[in-house]
Image 1 (cartoon, rainbow, N blue to C red):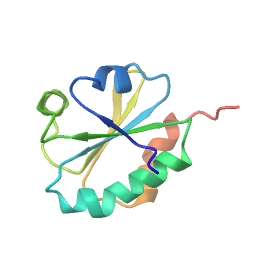
Image 2: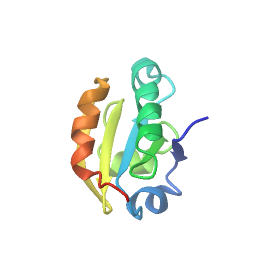
Image 3: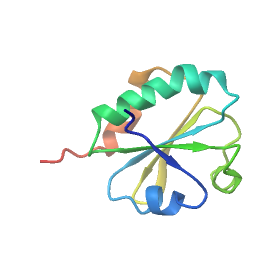
Image 4: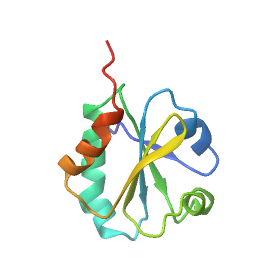
Length: 112
């Protein structure tokens, strides 16, 4: 079972920009080895661990050029952190889970 949501050019605004909670966007491509072998498992873990506190979505940049161009995605994997409809941070490359968590945590609010 996966806790990530696949997004596209068509629903990016609704799922990411209009989200009530912070969003971690995994910009990836099918041909990208590190996207699939390194980042995908980490993103899946974060989606489960932060369920209800952070929305975790995946956007295939090969199929969704409009969003990739709008946010200047030039290489994959790239992770974007969105809060209240704005990009607040970004991480380029295959990085360890703790680095992603450290960049994400300032935007996560405990839900009681």
